[in-house]
Length: 288
Ligand code: G3P
Ligand code: CA
Image (cartoon, rainbow, N blue to C red):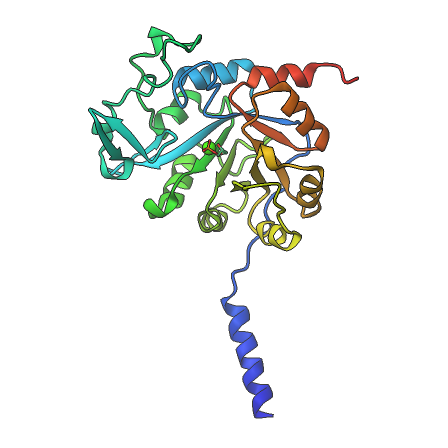
C-alpha cells in the first residue's frame, strides 16, 4: 500500500514537471511557399536591402533572415557568427553595432567572376532587424532564423517583443506574417511558450538519406509547425513521414529547376531558394 502511494506521488510529481505545450498552428497547405534564402541572394549580396527588395519584387512569399546579436544588444541580420574586418576575425556577440557598421557585406559577392557583381552594392552595410522591419513593415512576410541562440541569452523574448512592437504577430493573414526557425529545439520551445500562435520550423542538417523517425517528429509537432531539411536528403518516404506527423516540410537550399521539380513532385510544402524567380516560373509552368 505504501509502495502504491509512493508510485502515485512520483507519477503526479513527474506529470507536474513535464512541459505541456499549446498545440502549434498548422501552416496552410496552399500556396507552395517560395522562401527567399537571405533574400534573392543569387543576384544581390545576402541579407542586404537590394537582396530583400528583389525577392519581394520577384514575388517570394517570405524573405529569410538569419539573426544574431551584437555586444550592445542589437539584433542584426547576417549569416555568420563572425566577420572578418581589417584582417581580424571578430565574433558578432563580442563587437558593438558600431564596429559591425564598418563591415561591408558585398565584398564577398562583388567578385570579378560574379556576373551580378555591381559597384552599387559596395557601400551596403549589415542591416539591423529594426531597420528591416521599419523598411518593409507588413508589406512582406518574414521567415526568421535564430542563429546560435546559446550565445544570446534572452534572444527569444527580445525577438518576440520587437516583432510585436511592429504588430506582426497574432494576426489573421492568409499566410503567417512571421515564421521562426532554428536548429535549436530549446530555442524554439522558448518561442512557442512566449508566442504559441507563431508557427515554428525545426531545422535539420542531415548527413545522408537519414530518416526522421515518427516518434522524433511527434515530439517536434508538440512545439513546431514544420521542419526545414537540407534538400539532398529529402525522399518520398521522408515527406510522407513528416506529413503524417502533421508537419510541413521546407527543404533548403534549392537553386536548380530539376531539383525543385523533383521536390515539388515529392510533395514538399515550399523551398528555400537564392533564386525566387526560378521557383516562381517553375510553379507557373503548366504541368504535363
Ligand atoms: O534556414 C534554412 C537554411 O538557411 C539553413 O541554412 O546556413 O543557410 O542558414 P543556412
Ligand atoms: Ca538560414
